[in-house]
Image (cartoon, rainbow, N blue to C red):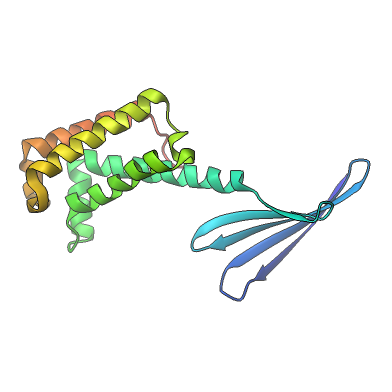
Length: 182
């Protein structure tokens, strides 16, 4: 038997919380309060188990959401890197942004996550991690050749090295088989 009641409240800092009090009978009564909280745009889930009186963060739910969001963002970055049309549209939408540099900044985030975040690296097989590292090496070769003088969209699209990066991004996207967001 399980009974639950939901509460919604605010922490005063504008963060929304939804708490659920659950009473389960499994030979004894257990009261669990689960709170889902939005903090700086990231969903955080925590629980208080009244039987033990301890507060336990439910990292699995948060990590799962981070993994899902990170994969979706990686897919969009690779789609942008692989597509002439998407790069042109990006420039039109945000004309003050230097598109190749912005895409490199986004890519750097995934390179850092791959090296530093176990939850991100765990999303990929050994061969996929090797493919991600190989693409990063190609990006670094391009950067070494062009440095701070990398042209913006339209000019960069004419460079054979950029075209090779675009092709490699498309190949990486196909190899990773990241599902489209639903």
